[in-house]
Amino acid sequence: MDCKYLNSCGSCVLELSYNEQKELKIAKIKELFARFYSGEIEFFESSEVGFRSRAEFGIWHENGDISYSMRGRNSKKIEIDSCQIVDLKISNLMPRLLNAIKDDEALVNRLFGIEFISSAKSLIVTLLYHKDVNSIKDNLANIQSKLKIGLIARSRGVKLEFGDTKINEILNINGREFSYIMSDTAFIQPNKKMNEKMISWAVNAVENAADLIELYCGHGNFTIPISLKFQKVLATEISKSSIDMALKNCQLNSVNNIKFARLSAAEIMSAIAKEREFERLRGVNLDSYIFSHILVDPPRAGCEDRVLDFMNKIDNIIYISCNPLTLQNNLEILSQTHKVVKFAIFDQFVHTNHIECGVVLKRIK
Image 1: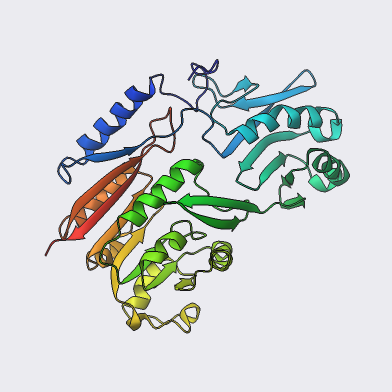
Image 2 (image 1 turned 180 degrees about the vertical axis):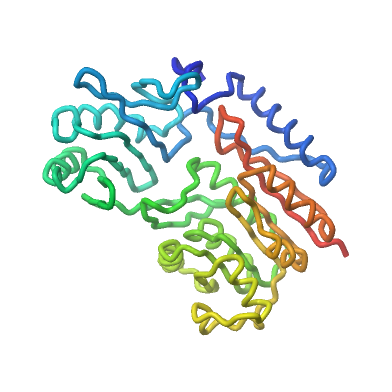
C-alpha cells in the first residue's frame, strides 16, 4: 500500500508486502495451534485498500481550521486528509463532508470526531460533539439535506437523527443474496467482503445437520444464512436491539425456522440444565431440539467455562474467534472431547497484526 501516512499512522502498522503479511499470520497461527491442528490452514485474502466499510476519525483543530486525524504510531495523533483503507463511498465523502462542515462555524465548534458506515444501500455519518447538539439542530438538518446522507449527531446524553439512519446491507453468501437491516450501534464486521467469505465458510462447514444452537448471534449475521442447513435453530443474544433487528432480518429473508431468545450465554446454559425458567423462553420447547451443531462467535474474552462444558456435549462446533489467544485457551478444554478438522484465517484487518480465525471441531467418537 502506497500511503503517505504508513510510517506515522497507528492504524496500519505492518510495513510488509501482502504476501509477507499473509506468511507472517499463517506462521503465527501454526505456531500457536500446533498441538491442536497440523493440517492445512485456509487463508482468506482481503483487498489491500478500500476494504473498510466502517471507520472512525478524530478531528484536528488548528488556527480555526479542521482536518481529520488518527492516532499516531509515535505520537498521540496525526493530521490526515485521506485514508486508503476505507471503501470508495466513504473515501469520496470525506473531503465533501469536511468542506461542508467548514462552511458553518457552528458545526466546526467543539466537533471532536466523525464516524462513517457504508453498506450496499446506505451511507451514514455520525458527528461527535463536546456540546449539546440541540443547539445546532437546524445546521445539522441543512448539511444532511445538502449531502443526501444519513446523519447522526451525538453529544453527552443526546442523539439526533436526520434522514434514513438505518443500515441496509446486502451480503452475497455462496451466490445467494441476504438482506439485513441494522442500527448504527449494531456490531458490524468492518470488512464486508471478508464477512461474506467468513459466513460462506461457516455454512459450507455444516454436514449431517439436525438442529443448531448459536450463542452471541447479534443481528443474525451468521444465523440467517446458516439456518438453511438446519431443521431448527435456537439463537441467543443479550442485546434487545440486536434481537429486534434479527427478527426483522428473518422477515426480510423469508426465514422461519429460527427462534431468537434474549438471553446471555450463562442464562441459556441454566435454562438447558433446567435450573431456571425464563419468561423470554415462553413458547420454546428446549426438549424438542436435537442439537447436532453449535456456532459461537464470542467477544474477545472467549467462551466462559460453563459454555465450554456444554459445547463438549455437542458433536459439531463452529467457532469464530477475534482473539487467537482466548481461542487457544478454549481449545485446551474443547480438545479433550473434540478434534479440530478445519482451520481458517480471515484477514479482516490488513496491514495490522490482528488475526480472525474460524475453527471446526468434531466430537471424538
